[in-house]
Amino acid sequence: MQKVKEDRKQKILEKLTEQGKVKTDEVADVLKDSMTALQEQITSLLLSRHNISNPQLADFSIW
Image (cartoon, rainbow, N blue to C red; front, side):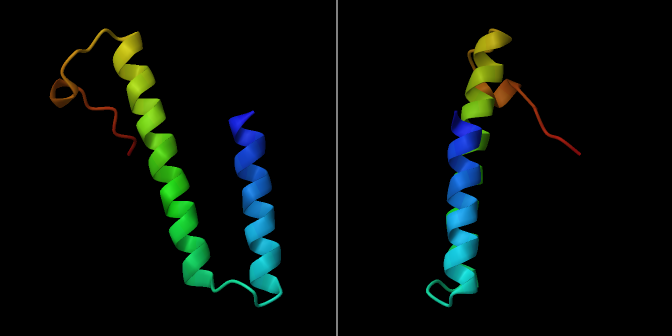
């Protein structure tokens, strides 16, 4: 459901940008915020699944 919401948001932003109603840097800011929220959700899920109580002890970096 979240993926569908994000895809729809992305398409709307693309359309508005094409029509000149939204600047590209504004779209980048929205996408950055969305990615940050998604990263926080994934980190929270990984911490709970691996029973890690201190986030400082975890490294879920993707290289």
